[in-house]
Amino acid sequence: MEAAVITGPICRAARALVEVSRTRLAENSDVDKEVIEMFERGIHVPDSETIAALRSALEEFGATFIPEEGSQGAGVRLKFSRSVTKRLGNLENEGGVAAKDDVP
Image 1: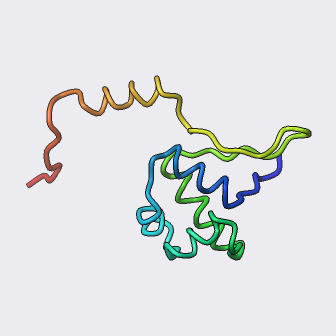
Image 2: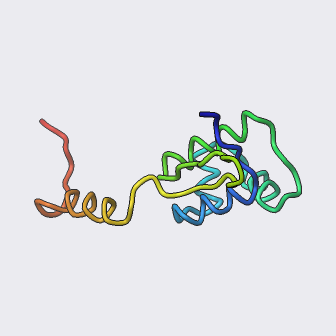
């Protein structure tokens, strides 16, 4: 299976799906916020290394990129369904408030 192509609009859609601001994506990908904005607006396409950094950061936030298949275009979706995300959240909250894990 070939890798999905990430375009500016797909990057913007992925950011919306995982509910991440450009600022946070910039911090996590080490890509300048203005570069992300220009890419998402279709003004400039960054080099492949920059796109790979954006992809990696978005995947860490929970995005999954879908390659183009025949007549169906490329896209993005959430890595986990809402029900899985909810169950993971419940598991994380079991046992009360989290505290420091430092062991003396």
